Length: 270
Image (cartoon, rainbow, N blue to C red; front, side, top):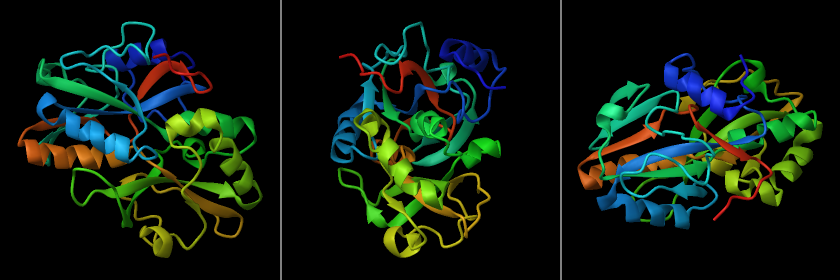
C-alpha cells in the first residue's frame, strides 16, 4: 500500500501496521535520515554535517530531550515511534533492531534529521524516469565508497552512496532534475553516473554485492547506474561517534526514514 498523507503513514508506523522501507511512500514529501546521539558528542556530529553538506544536509536538529520535530512536522510527530525500524548501537556495535525506542529514550539525547534522496524520487517519476527499486518493491541499493573519505572529527568514515539505474537517454534529465536548488537539501545531483564506478568511487564491482539495502535488477545495455550522496554516511559517522563517546547511538535502519510534512519543493521554515 502506498500512503499519500504523511500523518496517516506515521500513525500506521506508530501502531505497528507499517514496518517496511519508506521509498515510494507519500510522494512529493521530504523524507529524512535520523541520528540520535548524546549531547556530549552532538557538537562533533554537527561539525561533521557542516563539513560534509552533500552527504549530510542537516534539515533539523532537535534540542536535547526533545522528540518532536518542529520544522519537518505540522502535527505531533514523535521520532521515538514514527520511523518503521531503528538500530541501536553501543560503543560502535549494533546490539538491537527495534520498531520503537521509547524504552531507550532519555533527556540527554540529541536528534539530527538529515536529507534523504527518497525525497526526489517523485520528481523523477513525474518526468517519466522509472525508479526501479520502487518498481521491484525493494529498498534502494547502497554502497560504501572506499576511495572517498569524509572530512571532519571522525576517522575513517567513507562516503556512502545510493544507486538507481537510469535509462541511458534519461541520465542527463535525472541530473538536471535532482540538481535543481530545491533538491540541494536532499543530496542534489548524482556524484557519478557510469560504469567506471569502482575506479571512480571504490564501489564494489559487482553491484549485486550491496553494503546496505537491496540489489536492484538492471540492464547494462540500456541503463546507466547513477550514484547519489546518501545519508547513511551520517549513520557511519554516528557509529564512530558512539565509539568516542563510549555510549549509545540510535539511527534509522537503512531505508526506513522519517517522513515529514514538508513538500519536496517547499522551503524549510527557520
